[in-house]
Length: 225
Ligand SMILES: [Cu+2]
Image 1 (cartoon, rainbow, N blue to C red):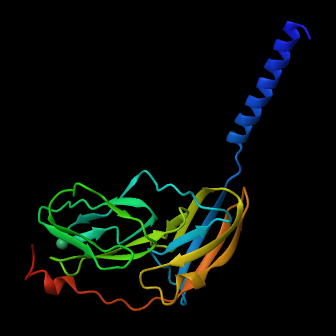
Image 2 (image 1 turned 90 degrees about the vertical axis):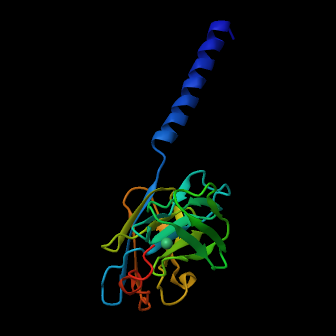
Image 3 (image 1 turned 45 degrees about the vertical axis):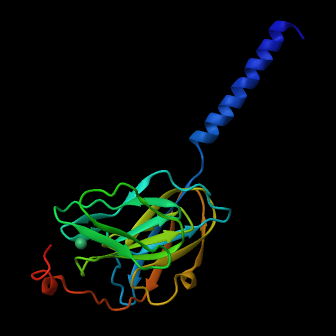
């Protein structure tokens, strides 16, 4: 083979390799899911977490980004924060009074003693499960961090819907969780085959326990700060 021919063959091969790589990247097939969560009467349920367990292993590395659980106007924001196991969460206090955040939940027992501003170190949620948050000063403050074993999840909006995009096609299993879910999340599992193109649709009809929270209006006049 002449030198010129060798170079030509090499260049041609390189082009093929590049084209294939670029093509794969540009056309990587990805699937999406449209979820809907409602109660038995068809009323949409907000703050439900729909999660998808992939057919293969989930990424082992914890996410590098830090999630936020704010305290604003003496409430936790958001009310429900779903995170992938290993996620760091910071608890910035946007109020000009002190909060004392704690949890007694077995998935993460911790406390951030009275503070203003952002605590120096985030809290790492390294065990799956439900972590109920409270504040020692303001009894009505309540929120949940839901620690998942899959990075594929989404929270429903006020209309009960949620959309998850950019998933590799495959045979997933979908589940739903809500702080007041009656029953076990594991029993809500249903197969969800995902193909590229048209979004897959999944619906959950769930029953919620009635809510009991310490009414803020009765407590606040006496313990306002
Ligand atoms: Cu507080």
